[in-house]
Amino acid sequence: MPELDGEWNVRRTGGLLPPMVGIRKRINGASGATIVGARALGVPFDVVGLELRYRMPFRGFVDVLSPDGERFRGRATFRGREFGRFELVRSAGEAPVQ
Image (cartoon, rainbow, N blue to C red; front, top):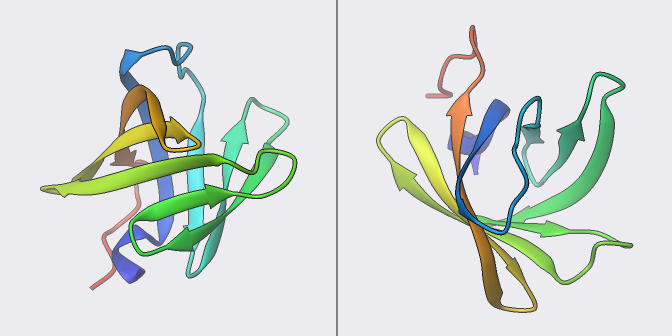
């Protein structure tokens, strides 16, 4: 999904998610990673439509996205049950893919 390609800042908007300071998502085509901390520890996922499906050992976790203007709203789920909400906002200097 080309409109998801790029680097995104993650902002918590509700639920059981911890503060998302310094968390971002890097997406390129059918794959990506949630980047945690300054060491850039990446948690890999596959992009399937508007879902980010995490790989082992985080299988069962899925971020479900919906477009909201130039950003995306997200629902963090585990085995189909929502446990938090967030939004993705393009990192500074990232232009939307046309």
